[in-house]
Amino acid sequence: MKAPLSFRVLRFSILLFAAIHVSCGSAGDRKIESAREPVEAIETSDFLSGKKGAVLLFTAPECPLCLNYAPAIAEFADRMKEADIAVVSVVSGTYYSLRESEKFLTDHDIKMELLIDTANVLSRKYGATITPEAVLTDSVGKAMYRGAIDNWAISLGRKRLKPTEHYLSDAVENYLAGREIDPKTTDAVGCFIE
Image 1 (cartoon, rainbow, N blue to C red):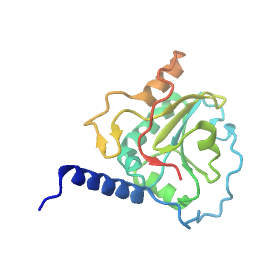
Image 2 (cartoon, rainbow, N blue to C red; image 1 turned 30 degrees about the horizontal axis):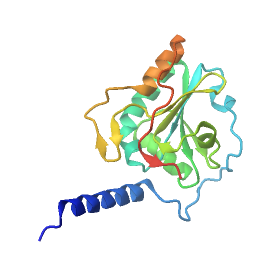
Image 3 (cartoon, helix red, strand yellow; image 1 turned 180 degrees about the horizontal axis):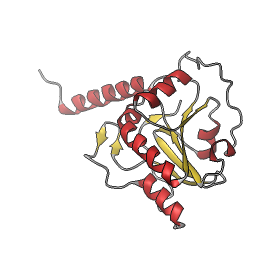
Image 4 (tube, rainbow, N blue to C red; image 1 turned 60 degrees about the vertical axis):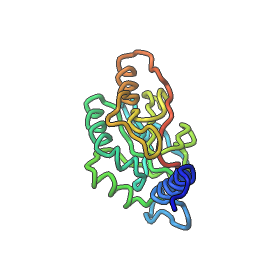
């Protein structure tokens, strides 16, 4: 006998949430395996250094949406070199090792700097809570845009065939042209930063 539709939908939703939670990771007892010290203070000059601005992409090596976005992130990082915008992959917290974070970038041919933000300095400073989530800063580190890369992901488990809004690219283009950035924030969809 089949369960009522509402029960099947609820059961599927619970299973989907559990699968996403497991695949996004749970902090548990795992710690950074690298010898790097926790980052207690990060200066914007660490990655801006004469650039017109920076894009901080908060990522997690096992987040399903980060994996899905990897080709778009690689293409975006390549485009930003010509625009003189620094692009940095920020892995917040202590769940992922330096090795895992580097492997994510290497496996997907993403050419950008990597910052392991063990003390969540940047995620707190810029209000990032999701991976993938982007922050565009000006040349002195002031946030100009924060949120989704685009509108491809509607919600967890739901995506459009292709994005129709390119929030991050539009924000960078408007910033470089001296135009107003609108919207300044959007809601990112993905895994919670641990």
